[in-house]
Length: 176
Image: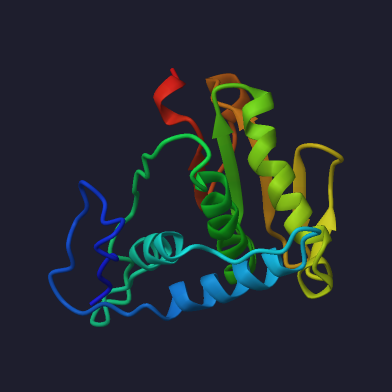
C-alpha cells in the first residue's frame, strides 16, 4: 500500500482499503523528475509530492478506474503545490492524445504562475518540448497529438464552451 512518511503524514487523507495499481503514478513521477532536472535550477519531487501523485493516480486493478475522480490538496504557501500541479499537468498532457487541461485561479495572474512553470518545464526538456507546439505566448500550449493546456480566471464567462479532461484549481479557497 502507498503509505505516507510518518514525518509528514497529512492530517486528513483517505487511507487505502486495498492494493491499488500505481503504474500511472510511477510514470508521472518519472516524467516530472525528468522535466524538472532540465530546468536551470534542477530538482526532483519531494517524497510527499510523490506520495500525493501516487494517491491521485491510483487505479483499481479490477476495474481500471482511478481511485478518485477529484482531490483537494491543502497546505501552506511555498510548499510545492504549483510544482505538484505541473507534475500532474505533464502527466495529463502526455498520457492522453487529446487532453484538454485547464488551470483555473482566482485571477489571470495567479493562473499564469502554474502556466509559466509548465511552460518552463516543457521548453527546457528536448524530449518533452518535441511533443508540444506553442499555441500562444501566454495562455495556451498544445501537444502535437491534439491536446491543449490553458490557464484562465475562474469566471463563468471565461470557461463557457470548454470540454476538459482535467482541471487544476489553484487557490481554490479564494474562488467564487
